[in-house]
Length: 234
Image (cartoon, rainbow, N blue to C red; front, side, top):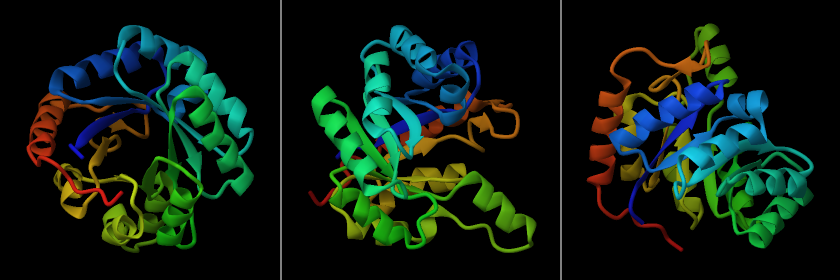
């Protein structure tokens, strides 16, 4: 599978989401993500606006669905999302509903293992339930809370190889990666590279980060796309 670069638009206004997405597309980003803050702030309107501005570009709706799986998936699919996110820690019936919606509505389902006591088992559960992708995710609060107690901040790279080896679907690693770490995730067998906080979004202010974000994105895209095919077992 050819590596894919995705930007997480964790902002709270449509205007900023679109301007950030325009910059990201200029830099070579492949997929756009309507981040959870944007969905909370703007809902279907935010996804619709992205679809109107970027016809033909894959759009991930980071719903983090925990219940009402079919309805949430349907709403986002009708708004123009091509990919939707459900949590591994939701009830298995919710995952079944989201997967069914994905098949009915021709959208792909990404399962997120954030908060699973056993992250590898969580990833395998996601695959077994029929999701198309695994998001291996160390959360924002988890990272910051552990670091605030003077302990080593966990990273999705800690178990990324184990997760990749446990499943046959493509894997994405999410959670506080540096530029160097994000660029290296295809080396672990994870071809879906997602960029958000702290690279492109200021997670404390829910706005685009300062500095030469476009230049950094372009460098990342060139390196990631330069890997060529990444083996996925399925």
